[in-house]
Length: 323
Image (cartoon, rainbow, N blue to C red):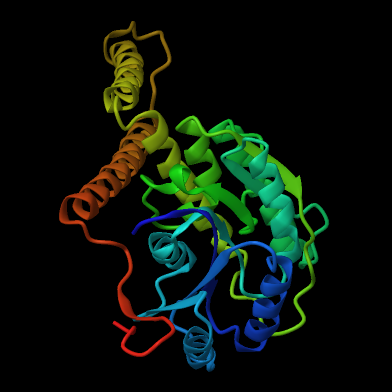
């Protein structure tokens, strides 16, 4: 799709947020009243009336587009669908739950204007549950920053600003949307972070729990593999192979000691060595199988031009525009 460098595209994934949609739309219009913009809502299989409300928005306003996914594919897939539809030179993802403040968008745009390619929001004062949201998030952010080498405080904040050129060649899978600043940085993008206002949820219920943290950590492993070893996998697999050869050599020395040593030397009478070796091999094989499977999946999507989502309908203003 062609782009307009002067246009700002706000992409909002939606899952059962009917009560928040009208206030959110009004806030976006207020914050961007002097900025050419479009709003792209991506309904990710809502069942509470959100789909009908978003269709109404699109039919009433020429700068609103609604994408209806055929079922719930997840936040990353919904964002990918919205990014594909966006026409703006600057793309801004935003949560639909009302906790991200749309009035922070102009501040993101000001930072982008300073020459940055990505500006990430930092919810320094979060209004979420301590143990189920804030503590796991803080731990995950620390691990992600360490592994990726990108020093951001809040990878999980959806409110960010991207130059379209930074997103043009990226493909999103799993929970990869939170790693976008790292992917962009690895490709040479300039990344900045600013504090943004985070508000307590006053309508609806959160869709995310502590279980999501474990999915993020698994995707972090995949991200690190693809960023560091995709073009040189022999470094990873060869390194592991050498490590296992060294362990095997050590096991061989112990075996000689146990079988050929003098009778006065104490003998190993327990199968601990065998058990340790077996568990290590099985665990490593499983890890490698997971990475190879991820590679096969990505090659499948790239070679077949398929996407990890399916659009049922795109609603725009005017007669005959739905398709």
